[in-house]
Image (cartoon, rainbow, N blue to C red; front, side, top):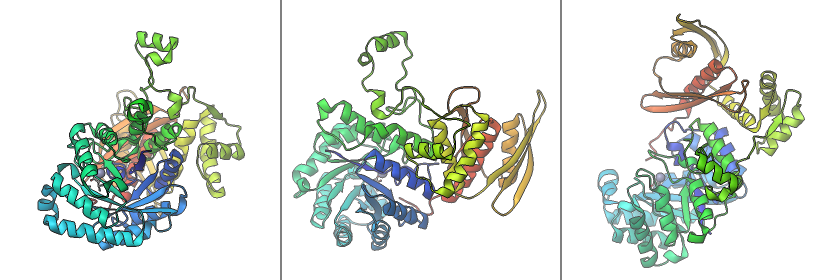
Length: 505
Ligand code: KIV
Ligand code: ZN
């Protein structure tokens, strides 16, 4: 069995525009538990109060999955990680320090023997708090192999039960990375008694290949993120690792505990929460992955699916037909039943709120699909995050004339109303938003597409704003595309409050 260690909520959340609020993190953590990953790295508790609180909330609300908190080699970090995860049913502390000469010289300004002493002290300290301790040699793939073996030996002697050897900068190639893993397994005393973990970044597009090459020589844990989100080019994608092991079980001969039929739902949920769109050609979860365009391929698939399909879409939870769920006459009970079926937990107060939004969509849209319900729920979680809320808007546009849009927003205390102008109604709406929130946000990306089919389909807007070097993603949803664009802008602006407060290395 290969353990799947999901770090979407920690390493993944560090990617530009992917910050999540507490409700969104909890929602995703619950879905990761349903997906069946073995360990959830819920965050870096010492990084900020917000991170601490979300790790703690996740630790308190899940019951089957091991919850892990990240810590640098300092007692304060380890105490924060311990306090955040201590109420979890299964707890893990993940301690790390860099071991490559480049990091020792330029970042840590420590000698090799100082690093070894720090590993012994801090892995030992974490072990005094919990049984399950993971230790990572940051930048392992650029570390001198003899020193790497020394560092791993010290960590194992000090009580680490998992040793993680990251390709932090995405520099490794598969044969070389596998050789590093094998050298450690073959040469370090006790390495066969602990889990050997891999954690690969995708800078050269080899994160998944490197992880699988390591599995082939004895790695027993893979660290990954949903949709491959993460720093720079991202981390190894969880769905790709899991489906490669499953589809090529004849080659790898290794299983995971992941419930593959939950993959698509998890990917969609993350896409909705972070408003970070999955590329149509993204392996496993991209929307083109099971579409056959060429006539020859279509013909083959119609005769026999296995001619051009190596995976059954049902295996990853893709429904052949979109299932029609509810309509304008559906009541609260039907809505609650549907929400539970889709995996959402809602209390009585929330169902009242969601029902109001549901009714307003149902009034303007005849058929409501599962995807509409998912989109509706994300809107609910975004509402809980505070910040600005759209109260009203009007837009005036005609051919060849400048458009005008008036927007009224509430910030919880006051209502603010401004006017904006532009080449079209959306341009005018964004000009108006800049008049309200200031011009520090630059529009970086903007896309609208329909959630389902039909002329009454909801329009989903994904948009990215840049401010002071940070990127904020926002999503809007309405069957009026001007409204959905304004909501996306408002949500992106509201994301600014979840910006990590400290350098997470
Ligand atoms: O990429 C990396 O080295 C990390 C460590 C903190 C495990 O994310
Ligand atoms: Zn990483």
